[in-house]
Length: 328
Image (cartoon, rainbow, N blue to C red):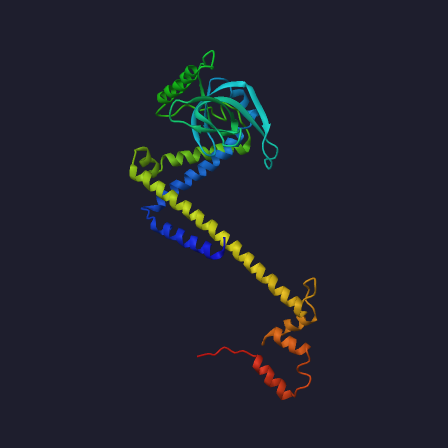
């Protein structure tokens, strides 16, 4: 994008940003920041829970796990097969870490990408039970609850029965939520970094739960929901503005760099710089001139312009090269 286009986009975004009026922004800001910090801490914590050495003993068939991908929230599912668990290397840039997969029954739809054999999975609101391989780093929670599985999972009815069992368990624990495995007491994770992250998550969760905005959300305040959504939209616009400003800075730097290259090219042609862009004799003379046009005066000197004129003539010419701003 060129500079005028970026500036036009910036003006448009700033106008949109200013048009969003938020009541009591300080409370909303503190709540959204807490939620954001907790989300980051949970993601880092999930990295530990994805490690097979911590999770393997608890990935038995019937275990309930909560799953969230980068783009979709699948909610609760049930591990149906851990015997076929496989471990593969993650992509480049991850330090060669291992990813562990298990078969999980989820309420989701399966679609094949156009022109490809790859499959994509989407959460479903209707009863669509499917058994899919899930990477352990997508587990946001591992429950203490295990449910009995039918002898065969070949039929749709047997899969639906598991989803119904999960729904009944969710209803049973509707107040406090389905109980989780405690990573410290149950899973015996003693890594210092993890323990610090765990404490951070607990602390942030407690602060969020007693926050006035969270209390209003729990009470079903539609106004508060709308305010939070508007504030988050405003923050997203602000992020776009910052990104565009960085892009504008980069574009202008490139323009200045091109301008610098052009100036150096002229100085090389005039002999002020050598082929290695080092200052030559003419350049050093020009550097010593500070009260007149350096390039013009240096050219006059090296072309012998002043050799055949009188002292008065020299003074007259030099007076023409001086510039004094008028003062009022």
